[in-house]
Image 1 (cartoon, rainbow, N blue to C red):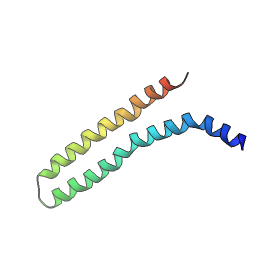
Image 2 (cartoon, rainbow, N blue to C red):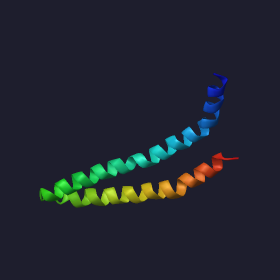
Image 3 (cartoon, rainbow, N blue to C red):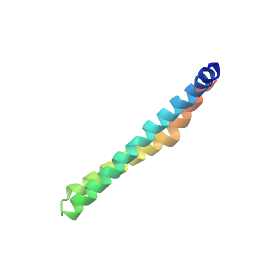
Amino acid sequence: MADREHSSDTDAPRSAEARLLFWLKVPYVADVALVIIGAALLFADNAVGWWVLVFAAIRAVIGTIALFWLYPRIRSRRRP
């Protein structure tokens, strides 16, 4: 039992990093949904689809910056 408690203590920083990484990746699912919606609007001859696609692209760029630039900085701060 003591070993389990000890191992969970050492896994705590990893699980916090895993949660952070998960929440940085989740918006990509929303971006895929926005692309599907934008494409559906374009197929229905609705020009708003272009704006939805542009919005999804901007979100994807911001998410990529957060994932590859901010995440390593946050992770390096947490390590002693």
